[in-house]
Image (cartoon, rainbow, N blue to C red):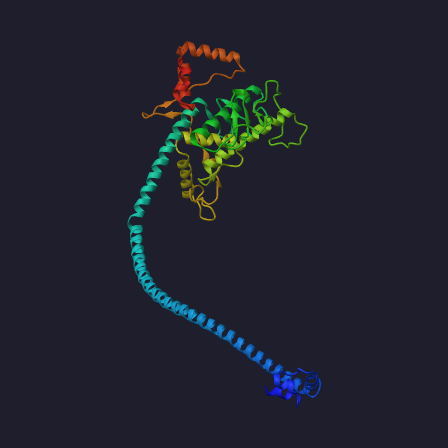
Length: 453
């Protein structure tokens, strides 16, 4: 009201009576537009300053309230984190105490395990010193007995097989200087050449000899269990041979891979002077001769695999100059008479007694030989009674010709049949049936037709 009094002009009764400023024009002009303008502006500035201070104070108060709220929130979070840290510290203490307990238990178990390991080692040493030598000796003796029984079975089977298919090697007698010749069923086999050995020998005879040799090798692989890398079709003098498609599939890879093992009836007496194997690109030789050479090569490879399987584990091999047929005949002769292992061990003992020891200290023949040593021909001599069998009383059984002459000689076959029928009254047929039943594989009922059943 003091400010209103200052704005009113002096002597204005109307404005003074109503207690309201600026009712008359004189008072308005005097108070607002005149001298009172400066005071009004000062009041306005004062009001603005007060409003600014009030606004700043309110802003500071609001910021202070926000900061206080944040501080309270942080305090709450701090208390919560402190509780979690305290709980984690307590759990860590419990885990540390559990680790200490487990470590102590593990140490105790380790000590107990060390003691048990020491006791086990001592018991194992005791077993090794007492039990296992006896067990190993018993196992070795059992294996030796089984090996001897198996070799006896092999000997009997091969002996029966050689009765049906006589397979002999000549010129391996003491004092004999004749060249080595191999015969099967009294038919001479080639010595690594595709030529007829005897000029008087017909190609059909050579074909029959190769067929019998093929049959003999197949039966040896069946009885003894040696590896045979071929598959054959035995048809006497018209036999054939081929490679297997797979280990389980006996069929040939293609029809052209079936190789004939026969020269044919119209073949000349001398096919070629070259030895096998010939080059596949040699176009000078006939196609049939190349097939026969390939068949002979496959047959020789199969015989070589069989001989290596028999002689390789024993640490010996036959002389390099021998043909595969000669090696097979020598092995069959030794297996039929005794054991091949025993024969080679005997040769090794004789060589060791004579001072024939290798440079590395290995004997000539033996199971412990690291390298295969070729035997001399003088060491491989067969006894004089190799073709004879001695019974328990000491009598020698001399056998005659078991098989008839080849079909290529019909006159000889007819004379032989008449002679056998007239002398034995059919006994040779019964003997043939019995020997076939012994030598050929299969159940006896499968050969009932041979006995007339």
